Structures are given as C-alpha cells and as structure tokens.
Image (tube, rainbow, N blue to C red; front, side):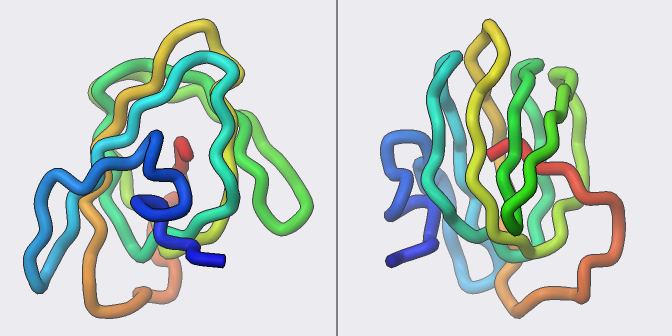
Length: 111
C-alpha cells in the first residue's frame, strides 16, 4: 500500500510545487469525506479554512478544530482522517525532504 497522500488519496491531495528540498500539497475535502491511511514527513501546515476533523492514528482517534490562518509544525506521522464538521477543509502542507527530525514541536494534523 502506497502511503504517499498524493497517490493514495489523490482525490484530496494535489502537488502544487516540488523541488529537491520541499513538496507543497494542497488538501481539500467536503463534510463527511474520509482519507485512507497515509504518511507525511516533517511538515508545516497552513490552514486556508476553518475545519473540524477526526484523526485516526495507532488505533486511537482525536478530534481537532483549527481556525483559518493557523500555521503549525507537524512532525512526521502516519494517520487517516475525516471531516466531521459542516464546512470544507482547505489546507497547504509544506513537506520537508531529508528525513524526520524526531518529532520536535506541537503536533497538529488535519488529514
């Protein structure tokens, strides 16, 4: 199973820029949409819309609500998610190439 979100969840993730240092993904979904398991390297997330999501990771889940305009650090992770709100999700991820940092910083995660 390919864990690259641009492959495994291509209906939600679109590569909008890539070079040898970073890859930028645009994520969009609608209320009720769900992703399959996928992985992200260390990333910076910028939210273009406010949203509510349920994140599934390691057999557990947690609900997050994030306001539009939020920027946050995401350590490398594997998860699945679902839009549990009543509005679309629109997010940009700047994925860093070069391996995980060990998870420093706060963990957010919309997808």
